[in-house]
Amino acid sequence: MAVGTAARKSDHWFKLVDVNGDGTIQRNDLQALGERMLKHFRHDKTSPEGRRLTEAYERCWTIMAEAMDTDKNQAVSQEEFRSYMAGNAKKENADDLLRPITDAEFAVADLDNDGHLSPSEYAELLRAMGLSDVDAQQGAASIDTNRDGRISSEEYFRACRDFFAGSDDLNKRTSQVFGGV
Ligand SMILES: [Ca+2]
Ligand SMILES: [Ca+2]
Ligand SMILES: [Ca+2]
Image (cartoon, rainbow, N blue to C red):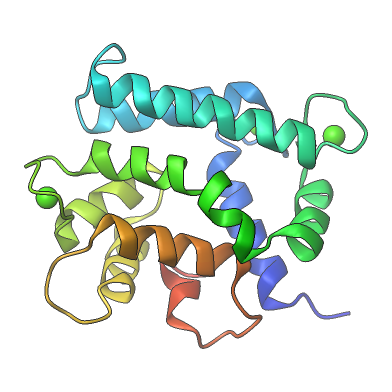
């Protein structure tokens, strides 16, 4: 069976978050991702932005462990992640689950504190997540849908929500918000 867009999107995200590349997502991957992002944007772990992101990723792990780790081995496998994404990633849940994470990431990346991400701030956020330059630039071009050079926290949240819970449509621009899928 061909791998559908939803599975490709979830695999793409999975690889970004599996920081140590051992094929599972564990708490230490989320911690490493948070540390890498804070280092990239030169935020101290104890700064308000640093604490907020660390807490958001800790919560992200708690949610993943509860909802996705079906065999309860404290590791979310690619299969466990895929089957959760295929069956349970609903837009209705996104406000609760996703928004605290996207808001924390947004705050870390908004370096000039103007309440928006410029395309270059957004591309930097994607680089901090481990994307290549090409993918980061492609992602930045995709997310700024009205091309005004400003990305709001709401636009970022919606793009992430559509990425995870959107329709299984390859051409949808939001498939590209984390770069090539
Ligand atoms: Ca891992
Ligand atoms: Ca597991
Ligand atoms: Ca900004």
